[in-house]
Length: 313
Image (cartoon, rainbow, N blue to C red; front, side, top):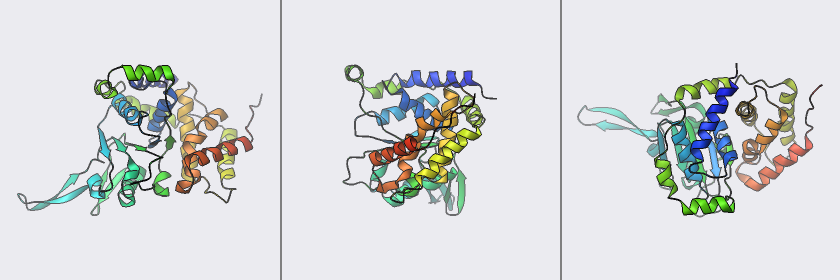
């Protein structure tokens, strides 16, 4: 049974806490929350100085758990993330020293500055929630979430994300600039970093795990499921761009369930699918060969073309 009151309370606490740092971006915060409840990962793409890092820091503080920020640079090696086996001269044995990926919430800052080899070292952790080193597999702690930032304008010293890794990001979001009044308020107050450092967790791990279970119980009618599949199949009819993968369809299905629950419903409606189609599908439809704007435009064209199921009275 879906406890809509618990979802509402959980959402309100997260929003109120994040609003202390980020103003006027409730929709983005809710998308991050939807991703978190679906055990997905976020790619936050926008120009510098729009609050990407502060948003992710404030969200991580709000949900609690271990948090680490990794600054991605071209000289970062895979072992710098996953860890290494080193020889302990005192014990005369090899010991495993875990890397920063072994935490619950990771802020991968400027992820596109790392080399493809280093980026690829995160694939197993992001998809299977485990890391294999020298033939030994180590499970990740739950909840586990990668929140990555990327500057889409600057190409010098950056490496495009592999399409396999792009597909593993549950959503790609863009912050955008604040309204004039909100921006002036942010400029005039004390630094955001000081506010973030004072934030406390407002939800518990037990609540998070319970809501994650309940998300899967949100009902999706046959008509809504067929509508989702119509969108997926329509994306594959254009041979000039890559279609949506099955992983993308699963992500949209789960995201719609979380979106419905956070809006006080135990069932999904077509509007849930439409609201989430762009953030969930746009980065998957063309991979690294299509710009963010082109991907969003293509998804919106598909939404206009596919017939919306009407409620049977």
